[in-house]
Image (cartoon, rainbow, N blue to C red; front, side, top):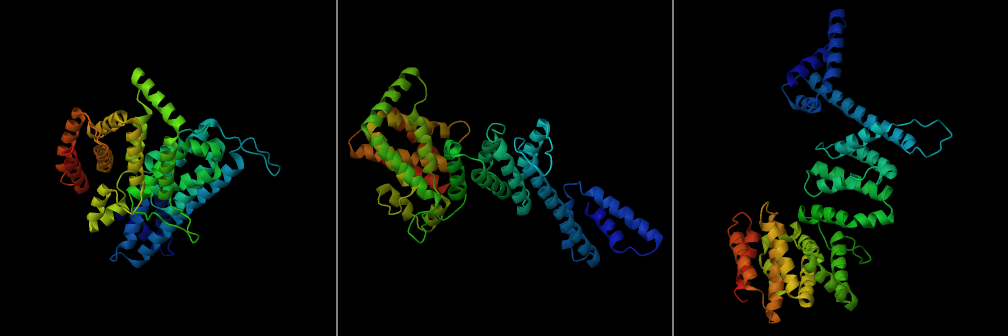
Length: 402
């Protein structure tokens, strides 16, 4: 495509006043208009502008054409935003001019097209910002009744998407939270929001945590997670809560349905995963990783808070806690295996529970310890994941005491 564009740009850039040359220029401009529909069009223009061997006038024209192409897209989105703001909410009264009726099929098409544009791999942040504004504006009218899959689509992309997709997803999420979510809606989705953002900030990226403002007040998300885990720890201590949860465990055992304990294990493992910032420090000084085993770490993270909560559950519900940890861990190592950080987190939690049981002279059934020895064998053979291997060796040593 680049050769074709070079030829067309050359006809435009070097056109003379002669009729034949002007006709050739007009034909080239028409052909350039047609090639804009090709997805490779902007990339080809950038490549042409990057080649020093190409005529300077052609390179300049390539950049001018690219700028016009981008400007047209931005203008199109700006115009669309104004149209949405004026006409999407059909129940609003406007005295200045009548509203345009938008068919339901058109609304569905626009919602899907804009969401796809905001979550694609394109890296132009201006386009992403304008698109996310459109999505947020529509969401203020349609979410959640007429657009229930909006937030699930964002939560599916943010934890594992490309940088461009994550940027688009977070931009939409920010706009939706600011413009669309009521207090009740926010708290109904808060778990998924915190889960997705936490993974992107601290598990996938080494975002600095434990930050305070000038008034010594915490303002980073990891502090919120730790506070919530500590709050749960306190709630579980209340006698009425202990009694009710014990009753539910008995009901689950009778009915054969999964208990709330397995859901708690999933949450604890999620917050016990090694953060990228911690991993960076441990790569420099591995002794910091080993300090966790003695519970002497001065860095009170969500990982430590989660293990503290699990230890308390073990003290209150004993064998049922062990069974829940074991049941959840098995799902991570069978079939489609989970990411190594989740596997390591589940083994870390069991190791901390095992140490507490040992200190309290409690025993763990032999069939469970034997099953964990098989997981230890698997872990220590993962040569490409040093922290999973290390966890395997540490858990293996811990199991020898039981």
